[in-house]
Image 1 (cartoon, helix red, strand yellow):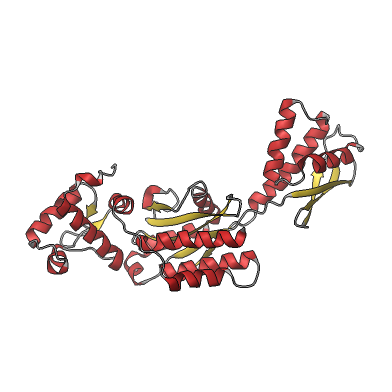
Image 2 (tube, one colour):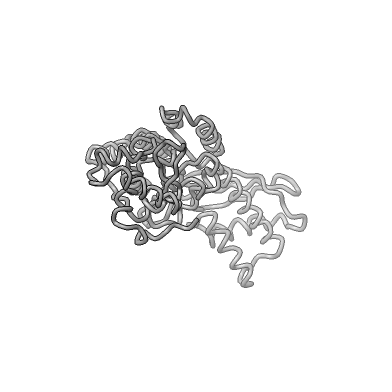
Length: 347
């Protein structure tokens, strides 16, 4: 069901809808008409409130889990609230200081990312996730050493001083003298670029006919770049911390959903693919329940924000995963601030 525009709701309906959503997000429990009539400041009878609740339910914004229970927001209702009514609460000075302090602790970048994920979990009461920057060293030099008639050892040196070795299968038609020619070509023409950039540039040169290499040598270059690109894609790219937070008191009556969520989190490749959707976003993205295929069964939400280096390039994603009753108003700006702080470290 498409979200009804916020303008379709009367002032009274908006007020009651907001109270139901905020009450549910705070307690995890349905909100009833008696609760709303008693301490909400609406100055409406329980009967009037019940009538509005019924209208909101008919619009698909609220649902009643049981006949005698109160109402809770549907995924459609949560999306309407998040997009059109939510007032974010910026991180407190104490929270900002804690995030910056944890990120700035001495150690490797990977350690800082793991610590960031754990801190987000603590602050949000969900599971903190950080997508680690893909390892894409910039090329400085490539050497090809013959190992036999149809194999060679490719030695790649990155600008950061890293050295990686790979065995490359040689095309049958390649000349042994072509190995040095290919290595010199890559070093001269593609140095200073990442593997992805190098592959794109090489293919463009081949397609335009500007490459001076013969067919066998071009094939060898393509094979070498493909090996490194494929290997980099298989490296672990995700850090998840705080799964235990998902087993709170509210989960006792919904163990199947939590079990499904924990199973989903074990599939790190699928989680990484979901977070990839946030890489192109200008700011924090929110996926609620079945809006994302991965967490559709567990009915969970994801709040994720890309973080960038000093040149503005997206290098990773940081976020929080938890039940749909996450405190969006608090967690969204917290994730956004964490992404900005990580960007300063990575840059």
